Image (cartoon, rainbow, N blue to C red):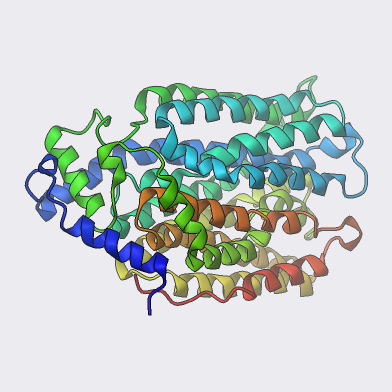
Length: 444
């Protein structure tokens, strides 16, 4: 027996399969579809990837600032540094509902405002004079970055569900790459000789250049299929054919957020399943960038500056894994096995960090632990594929993100300074986090 939500999805799919809108034109050939997909990839994905990568850099460079002397400069005591990560995620969670803004507002205006906001706030952290000042800025940064997190909703306007997973994987891989080059960049910036403290220079150099992407977003982000000036009329018809083949493309008719469909996501159990799984993964995912430099600096005889550089290679490997696994999972139309496999690999990494003392196995543990990023990259397209209207998908993503982003509230507070350098309770909590929500094998 199907529940009401599933029946509704089936009805919508049947309506879509029988759509005969003359605006769609003749059905496209496979070669035409491939050509249009390539064009979309080259025009959309670089912008989306770069902006997300910069946003992650702006939130996670706190870890590099930590090893560059932020604590001593601002007089942080005890676990105050850990709470800075928590404050970011408090507002990041509260404003997850802003994902619906991608459906309600024009994308080029929405993105431009977001980028200007988080770039300015991130750079302003360089002016912080005390704990209270940087707490306020972390709160505000969480608000603005939550608004960009709805990119998977936007991608579904242009890509069919059997192609969107790879693109969402590219989007998420920006997180791993940001932490890779962030470590290397932090290593270089910290060595700059100036009257300013190294951590202040870090926030300025990594924050202000992001404003350039605001200009790019204003002129280059299409609001929907019809406003994509880089597509010919025939190519727009092809995109409409593709996205309406297995979902209701209300964007084709340029409709706004449909409240009934948006609320339907809250009655669908699938929205909550992926949300709980995301919570488990995010206990590790969100806290690692804040603490990896510190963990590495406590392995062997590495200095704080060397730790920033050594944090780059594990993230670079994970970046490659995200791209590869997102591509393969689209082709085989399965998500669950990838989540399970890399969850196990990540757990092995945390076990190595918690139970070994030698530098080599502990550094290997960092490589393994960071593969939790792959799980998150696979979960996001799973959400998109579970809902068959764009408005319902927006609602599903709000639930998914709200549940999932609660994970960092735990993850950023389980590295107590008195447990350094092994943090056993932290790693046990992270292992428990991903094992609790058993990933279901999915055949799309």
